[in-house]
Image (cartoon, rainbow, N blue to C red; front, side, top):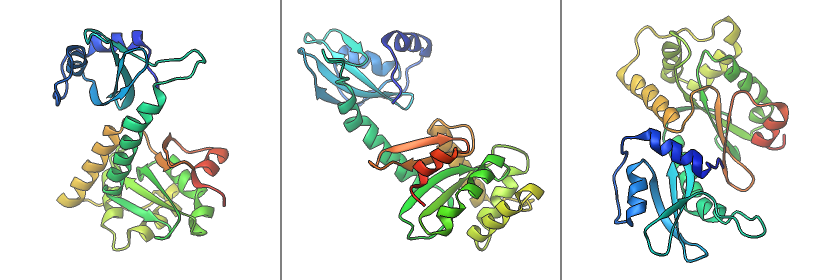
Length: 255
């Protein structure tokens, strides 16, 4: 979890300037003021010292806010006890991080992707893939032992951001009679150019590619491959770029 200090957050709010979103509930005035600066308040939780805790988000990151007993001031940041324990972490995980992760996973499930691997594979991995991306090709090659063994299904959320032929190639893969076979052939022939790009992209496929790219940007990613997976505790994790051998074992599990 990325934590912003109070000073960093105050600077950000000063630069943000324009109000974002809508005020959904009748929060106390300091909380409304933060909402007007772009903070999305998710819910409340009990906090020590007579304070009321608010779980919120800013720029897709969890944020803790504490309202003073008189309701006139709000303190932004983590609360630490005498032993150095971060008291903000549990309520933020419960009220923000876990629901946000579940929402993201559902969005990925509803995106347009090409399955790579067995339908009944015990582990599902999503990765944003551009057909011209050499690091996506490396990821495809590195994952073969897990995929061919039936232990992992990679779901390639196709995007077209790297070059003029990316949209046509991505469209060719999505439009293929057997997209999984087409993707395999493309990755095997990647060094020689791979799949031939379509000259004309149907409105349906164009909309699918646009929606995938919008989802990628919404989640805060700008490079391929970006891989999303669940760790042993079910927490959503992300990694940009081709993973190292050690990281690959963490993402895909034992061979």
